[in-house]
Image 1: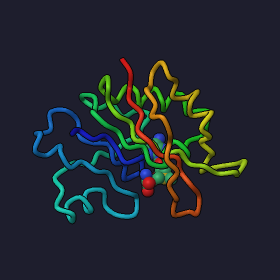
Image 2: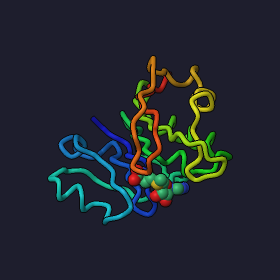
Image 3: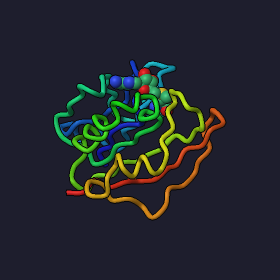
Length: 156
Ligand SMILES: C[S@@+](CC[C@H](N)C(=O)[O-])C[C@H]1O[C@@H](n2cnc3c(N)ncnc32)[C@H](O)[C@@H]1O
């Protein structure tokens, strides 16, 4: 599988790998957090994948991905840029491509992290562009907050 990203971490953004990477190198693509060198955890784990560092608002893969893992990136962006981010995610995926989401749940009025409430996410990832699972699954987050997780599928 050609996997897109485990969230976005600047400067060690994990967005990878574009088409053209040999398939043997594309199978284990993972991204990394910002605390270590971007390639190091992959190499340490024996995974053969590439890490791309980029501003997500200018990142343009050579070819779309089959899957993207969005991990606490949306909630780090000001909501005024969420529509642009959704368009980016949509454009990075092949039709039918999967977007693994982890929508941050918080009662805080300010962010980051900004609350990604289910009703707002339903509007942002609109049903005419994304196929939704029946339910999102709550998962605890190390900050003591919860995320709603699931896999959306790009339509068309
Ligand atoms: C809450 S952190 C999540 C980091 C990582 N995904 C994780 O789960 O550990 C959000 C990250 O988004 C990054 N970020 C914010 N705006 C970005 C942009 N325009 N391009 C790339 N990364 C960005 C921030 O630098 C930050 O590292």
